Amino acid sequence: PGAAATVKIQVRSTVEPWIGVSMGRLPSIIDCCRNPGNRDAMSDPLKLALLGADDLVMSFCRRAIGDGAHIVWASDLKPAHQQNILELSHGVTIDANWETALAPGLADAVVVGHDSADPDETIERLKRLVIDGIPTVATFPVSTAVLPHYELEMLRQDAGGLLWMLAPAPPAVINQLSEWLREGHPEIGTVRQTSWIRHLDDSSKSAVLFEFARDVCFLSELLGGIHSVTALGPEADAVDFASLQVQLLGSDDLAVSWSTSPAQHDCDVTIVLAGE
Image (cartoon, rainbow, N blue to C red; front, side, top):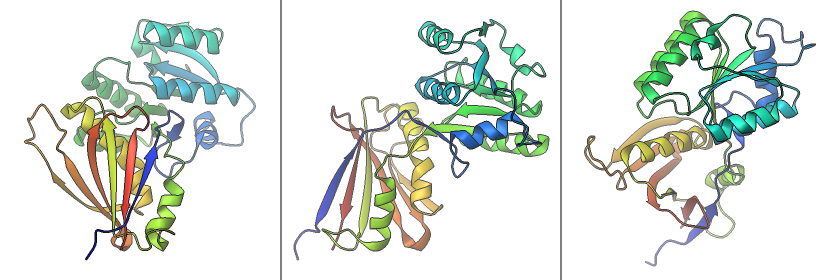
C-alpha cells in the first residue's frame, strides 16, 4: 500500500488576547470586571490596574482602552512597557510597591503580566489577589507546573473570586480544522492522524512546556475536551525538551499529536493532516 495522503498547514501565532477557555471574549470580561454583582451598572469607565506586562497584556490593554477602559495604576513594568502604558492611558500612577494593587477600590480588576517578578513570586501575588476577592486577569500560564494552577483555582472557589487566564487567540484555521477532523478534508478524505508541530528557537524545558500549555488551551476546544494525555520524551530533569511528544485524546476518539521542531522564519506552527 502507498503512503497516506497528507496536507500541511502553516500557521502564524497571534498576540490577539483571548480570555481563558470558554470564558468569552474581551467585551464580556469587561462586563464581569465592571461590577460582578450587577452587570447592568455600567455608567463609569472600567478601571484597570496593571501588575507587570508582556506583549499579550499590552494587546489586552489596547483592546480594553478601545472599549472605554482606563489604566489607573501600574507597577513592575519594564521601561518599554511603562512608556507604552503612559502613552495609551493618561493619568496612570506608577508605583514601586506592588501591594498597592490589594487596596480596596483601586480598580475594577488587576491585570498581571509576566514582567511581575519571578514565576514563584507572581504565583504568591496572584494568591493574595484571589484571596482578597479582587477580580484578576493573568497571562497564562502563570507556571509550567500544574500544581500552582490547581491551588489558584481552589483559592478562587473558596474566596468566591474572579480569576481569568489571558492566552493568545486560537489561529484563524482552528474552526476549519475542527470541521475537517469531524467531517473529513476535501483532498484527503477522513483524517486519520493530526500532528501539531510547534516551531521554537528555544528547546529548554521551561520554553517547551510554556508553549505546550498555551497550545493546549485551544487544542482542548478543538478536541471537545481532553480525556487522556500520553507523553514520551526526556527525563523530567533534562535541560533540553526538544524530543517531547504528547498525544492528546478528546471526544469521539479525536486525537492530536503535539511536538516541537526548530524555528522557521515563515511560520510558528505546522499542522499535518494524514488521510486514507
